[in-house]
Structures are given as structure tokens and as C-alpha cells.
Length: 111
Image (cartoon, rainbow, N blue to C red; front, side, top):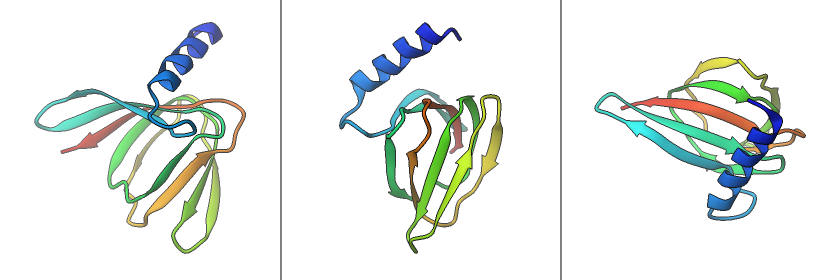
């Protein structure tokens, strides 16, 4: 994707955000087996403390993400474009984009 297209995409997502500074998640599709989402966190954006369960995702555009856990511990993960992961989290965490680029994912949750 060209940089100007990414910028236009980021502006469109930011315009739909309920609160400034929140990551934006838009449902793409769902069926009887899964739900798919487009997820965007601009630099400085974050997501609240939650258990996220099992999901698989593909990184469209990567950045540095800081996870904060309920016990106060933190970790920084450097996601790169093209990374894919399958995760299950048993601990709640919040996260923030502490990088200089948008963090953009395609996410799949099973039903």
C-alpha cells in the first residue's frame, strides 16, 4: 500500500473513533465460525485492559507496542509488517502504540 493511501486510511479510521487516543476496530465480516476485524492504532493510541482470548492476526503495518498487565508489569513487542501470530492470552492487559508508525492488523476470532 502506498504511503498516501495508508495516510488516507488512517484518517478515515481516526474520524470513526469514539474517543481520541483509542485504537479503532472495524468488523469486516462474520459467519457461523469466525469474526474478522480491521484494527488500527495510530502512534499514541491505546486499548483498555481486557482478556482477549484466542485470535490469529496478520500485521499490515507494524510498530512498537507496549503491553501493561494487571500486576503492573510491562513488555514492549516490536511487530513488523508481514508478521502473523496465533495467540491466546489468559491474563488481561492494555496496550499502547509507543512507536512512530501506525499499528494495523487483520484479526480473526473463532466463534
